[in-house]
Image (cartoon, rainbow, N blue to C red; front, side, top):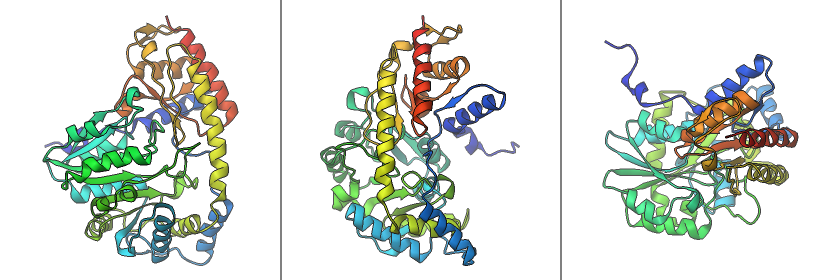
Length: 400
């Protein structure tokens, strides 16, 4: 009898974490490595938020809390949804977990049965399909290429829906592409969903506040209120508030679903860190002006990277609407051989050779469900990004 669960054979370790770890190993060996694979801001947590965490410790707020969030944080989340998204939720319709990933996993675990399908536009965040598989469902990926701006069209969504569809997973701005859906684009998708009342919407809004230029964020239940009774709107403090390590995610949705998610969490992690919850209260209720300042930095870095990558032979890099990623197409590099002698047959070959020959760590596109591409996280210094672009261009110019 095998010792390990058969479920593990259906999932893979996170490729983004694997690439980050590989880059760290090479750096520890003395290699000059530029890591562009990790998806987290390089800013420190703002001082007023960090102070709230320290204050929680000093005041002894270090004991167990309610399984899915303290009342004060639920009130702050409720106020955030009203302020930013014109959505009204009761505290009983809000759930807090140990990061957005746990919140998503709780929802899928609480709702999926064998045979249930989950529509996931590709490219996608690497964890979506594997979380669906772990929960017993079947991921149905829909390829959304450069021709549609990496965004699913209403016709594609309509074609993917079957009687077995339970969830449609929606992420805007997107990891890995940074592509965002405007109000009219999202309204066209919600129109399709209104025709299929058995399909629920799982929207990942983690990059809501990381947007650039004229792009304006909107979320499905905001665009089409009739979808609110079957939408779980997921968000968190990790990205916009530079709190990745604090591990606080949250969601709002129908009370029966929220109760089911709390049941799952009660038998897994129980409550999120009490200290982190109090820091998250301050994040949501406190000053927000630093977000615009950080976005100005990210926008500058985005432009630097887009210009640098588009100067590379065989690379096409669109301009993203938000987040802190670009997802260049490398069709012009496939079928060639690197200066170091590696045959570039796939985007994984490209990323591996780039790391080994030039010391730049990126994540290959197949990990996100769409090839041939790679993802760059530009959440690092201008100097590092400039040097990375020089190395990537040199690598591409060396392909024969």
